[in-house]
Amino acid sequence: MISVFAHCGYLSETSRMIEIHRALTAAGAAVRMATHGGVHEPRLAAAGIEYDLVPPHLSRDRSMQIARSYGQGSVRESMLSDAEFRSYALAEASYLREIGACAAVTGITLSTLLSTRLVGVPLVTEHAGSFVPPVFERGLLPAPSTPMPVRLPRFLAAPTANRSVPRLRWFAGGLRRVAKELGVPPVPGLAAMLLGDLTLVPEIPEVLGIPAAHLEAWRPNRHYWPTTRLRYTGPLFAHLPLPVPEKVDRFLAGPGPLVYVALCSTSADTVRRVVAALRSLDARLLVTATVHDLADLDSPQVLVAPTLPSHLIMPRVDLAVITGGQGSVQTALAAGTPFVGVPLHLEQDLNVALIERLGAARLLSRRDAQTPLIAAAARQILLTPSYRREARRIQELYSSVDGPRNAAEAIIEMTERRSQPIATR
Image (tube, rainbow, N blue to C red):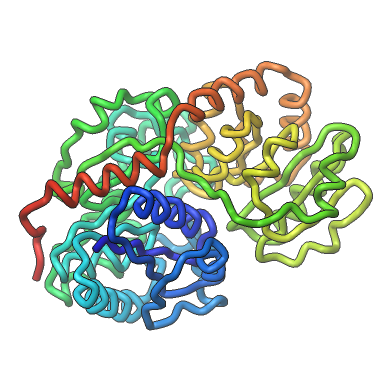
């Protein structure tokens, strides 16, 4: 039995687990979906997936609090408290034993780093995205767009980030303490915290810039789990089973350029300031509010809607403004839509920088995105045909890759190949 454990505090990770669950089921694997809960838990039922709710329950409010603070709080603190990590890990371990799991697959349910080692089953992750060790080792990380604890000249920022990330223990303190208490191997640090025994890299070599043979031949050093292996899958992004609301459909059919503002996991005030800066464009703005109340932004130029099926919206707009999560980036590119990326942390800096280098996007810091600079960047993309041309070139590359199926094949192959249990207590 393969356990797929969704963190329903994040729409992107919930949707990726849905995609992987569907592909595993289609491949004939025995699979069960599980979650602790969260604001996006209803998405599982909406997708027609039966799932197990494993206590302790992650409330809507707590899951929203975690999502808002991801990668933005004190580096000395973990996403969860020690008590939360402990209770989730012990509950997951009991659940994995109960269902006879041979592997667990997760999108950022970090407590599975502990529970799978308590039980002795391999962990499969995908939430690192492209933020994986070969990227650092090749110096591909850009200079961070958000302020770092230590100020450096810009020409030193990118090299320092690439050298430092493997050694950082940021956000890993709680996991390390609880691992010691439970008697399982400690989480080495920040980069390792995003990796499993099998880490799926949901991108293609043409975008990441690392040949498949090189990425999959990578072997960990002391900064990572010794069992970690990497595997390309291709894009994994949401196909939410939601209709396009009638008022949104009418707005999409209107005249003139259309900009889709989908700034998830950021504050309502940031969205308001970005929209205010974009109003100077000769374009209409479609804003997805997700969990925020942004009704005050509605006007003849601006339409605010709740969570939208972005895979159906992106093909009908001229430009997207997104934070740069890999799922949002891939949804835009799979539609051939260029974008302005406003990263919230270094992993999103990488996602946007990769596409900026290919000529299909512009990267702006969160500070600059709340000024007239974002309107200038959007105007440049709208008036320069090469941006859409490059986005459509990537769209063609993506269209030949079935990311969910490749992910399922990699997971099944690993479960069939692995005969020895990993380190346990």
